[in-house]
Every structure is written in structure tokens, then in C-alpha cells.
Length: 247
Ligand code: ATP
Image (cartoon, rainbow, N blue to C red; front, side, top):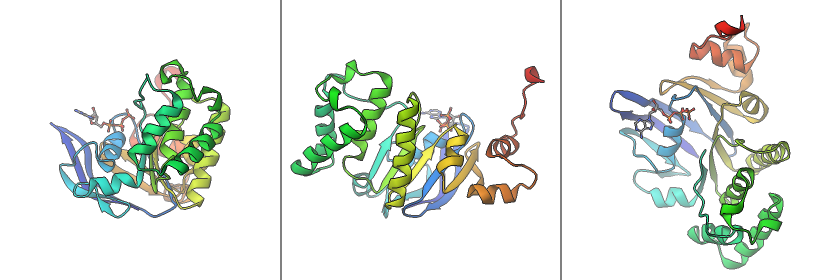
């Protein structure tokens, strides 16, 4: 469902994405990890058609994003780390707007909007303006709106920022269930425990390059003597496991 071939994106001298190739099959929950500035968001922006690659190709749901962006976008959902919502719409209007963008039929839109607002505990905010929502409520609304058109591939940049423990559990269960149901999920996170918890496979990127890829068990097997994902991450990305102040 996702195929990257020798993908490159440079900003001047910065190699934001440096020859990345990978494949993510249908129904896989794939976690993309890396330090700040490693190239995670740039890679997602290329796959979602927001940034053009300098070379290489990105295929999503069977479509080349550079040549057939609309077909790819119709089949994907994207939850950015800082989502843009329209402040002067109500939650229900925002959902309607998103459903219309994806040509969700009116009857299904009505039904799914009600179900998703309930699922994310936003039914009481249905008529509230987006600008009056708390940060966590805005995050929940973007999840509800993104799931409305049943994307085949879901990209999420930092899925748990600003969410309370109940919503974190809800999102984790939902992502696992959706992946089991065939949705392909590609997410970035700095919360390594989340990747340990839910990922089928993990890639670690550094300086725009994939430096490790595999299931948690495979990563551990590749690094005998290192027992946690955190230690593997720190070891591979060359960051000291324990800063001077803590010693
Ligand atoms: P973080 O974990 O901090 O969100 P990231 O892994 O998502 O980081 P990117 O945002 O992809 O990293 O950035 C990769 C590199 O590309 C960084 O060095 C960043 O400064 C640079 N970069 C990203 N976007 C631009 C841009 N529009 N113009 C110039 N440089 C950019």
C-alpha cells in the first residue's frame, strides 16, 4: 500500500530525505522513528503530496503521488502534528466539509458523523465552534473527520500529542483494530513505548536515511545485548544514553 523507491528531498545542503526505500503492505501498522530533524515529517509530506521529492518515487494505495495525486489522496487520510481546522465552523459543519471534500454520500456522512462524534466523545460539542474547543478536543475532532471517508492508508504525525489517558487508550485500540481490518497505518512518534506497544514494524531514521527496520523482535535480534527499543534507538542514532547532568 506504500512503496518508496530511492526517495530524496534536499533543502539546500540539508539532506532531509536521503535515498529512502521501503514497502508497507496492507493492514500493517508501521512506526517511523527518528530524532528531531531526521526527515520523518518531510517523508510523510512527500507521501501525502504536500512536498515534491527531488528524485525517487512514492506510491500510495497503488498510485504514484507525483503523477496521480488525486487518486492517491482519495484513498488516504493525514493527521498532521499541527492540524489546521476552520475555527468558525462548528464541529458538525467541519465534519460535513471534510466528508464533502471526499465525496462521502450524504446518508453515510450523516450516519458516520454521528457515530464518530460519539466515539470521540464530541457529541455535546457538535454545535460548538471549533475555536471554542480545547486542544485535546481539536485533536479528537481531526481524528473523527479523517476517519469519515474510511481511508485505506492513514498517515499520522505524532498521534498522541495533547491527548488525555482515555483518548490515548481509545486511539491505540482504534489503530490496532483498524489495522486488523485492513487499514494501512504509517505513523511517526517520539513516544517509543507507543511504537513498542502497537507497531507491526518499525523503521529508525537518522539524517534522512533508514538505519534500521524490522519488527521489535527483529530489531532486538539485530542488536544482541540491547534489550529495549529506547536503548536500540539511542545506540543507533549516536545520542548518549545518559546525559552528563544525570551521571
Ligand atoms: P521532528 O521530530 O523535529 O519533527 P522530523 O524528523 O520530522 O523532525 P523534518 O521536519 O522532516 O524532520 O526535517 C528534516 C530536515 O529538513 C531538518 O533539518 C529541517 O530543518 C529541514 N527542513 C524541513 N522542512 C524544511 C523547509 N521547508 N525548508 C528548509 N529546511 C527544511
